[in-house]
Image (cartoon, rainbow, N blue to C red; front, side, top):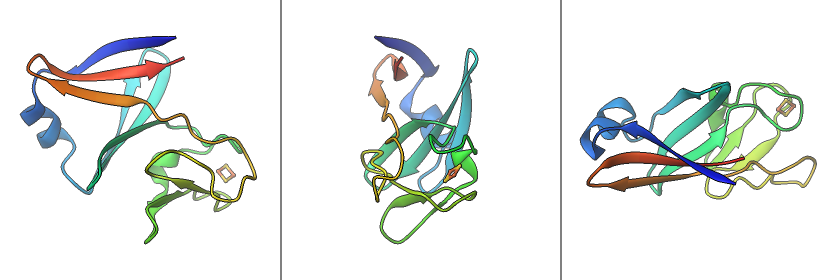
Length: 109
Ligand code: FES
């Protein structure tokens, strides 16, 4: 099931809050979501690493566009959330949609 949440009232506000090359954690109810602003667009994942629950917001992006979890070094594609060596679950990639009405998160349950 997908739920739609308005995150920002405009694209400009989104870009100001999360400039290119940065990341931010947002709270949606009880859930914590990481938004990465990458050159390929906004990439949105749940904050917890599926391996053992560490915060992915603290991870670094390597030269291969992978999020590297700081706890055990598992790597997840920033482009689609795939775990690079199939050692644990992939990350769920959520969509961020920008329209005249604002920036909306399409959150998959
Ligand atoms: S908690 Fe992320 S790799 Fe182990």
